[in-house]
Image (cartoon, rainbow, N blue to C red; front, side, top):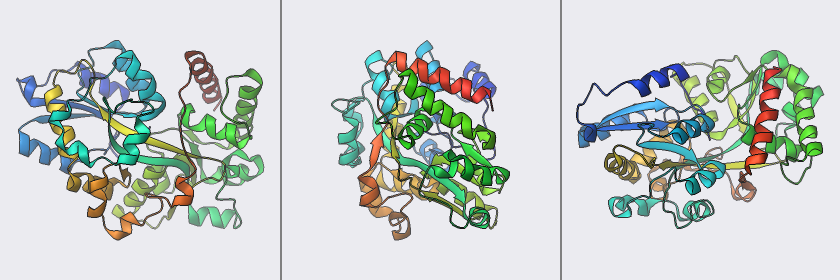
Length: 370
């Protein structure tokens, strides 16, 4: 569920402009594929290879939040052919509304490479695995600059949300920069669990307690964003964030590419280990579903999926790709957590419309006070 962006960003205005443009690169729409996905989920080298093999030109718009994508798709005529979307709650509520086209399995022989355990989990939101092809998966936890954190607080509770949600602890790190995801679906359940609530609830007393906890630490939070926070970690502008496991790997890569010396670490919190599965889906009104299917089948080749995991640091949902990964990648516990952590994975539950409105309103009010 997850915003990943490098140095160049496509802003909302840029996306709107992109949507309003006709494809000058190809008059034949059958030779154009429009993708709406998280940044670098399909690296430039992969896109170039697909274009060379098929002659299909790819336009790539960067998705910055699933909520924005859902709004665009709900209006219709988005002009997109492939979108990356989280399994729960997004796909769970969108599939019954007819947002997505059923996948033509005969056109997807490489679908057999998908991880059977991931496919089984997906059945809870996509019965029969009819609409979604899993792409990458990961967790939500704490990203941090280990040198700065240890210098400020040598005994920092790095396995706990105390790092950000305990006022006295958060105050210590405010100076070096704290960030949290701009996603109530990620953050609010973690705060709820931190308060030992059985689950995130729209009950007034329960939700008030969650928001009171966030407001208590609000003065110490510098950023609320799903875009670019990991780059700021890599550049030393932030030292601590609630974020995604894959983004920790992206931040590490950015440090290496810039020849920096920032040490980025990632911690699973003992209170909760949120788990997400990002999927490739085809909008119901896609102008070019044939090209979309060709692309999905292309990226589900084991060596292609492995190359993406190697580059961006997210765990592939392609089981056949794992043997193509180096031992250092397969053994990286940020990408592939040990069984003790996996046993605590939790998919986000599906919320009712009333719950969604309550959580969205509370989150917007919280952000407005930053």
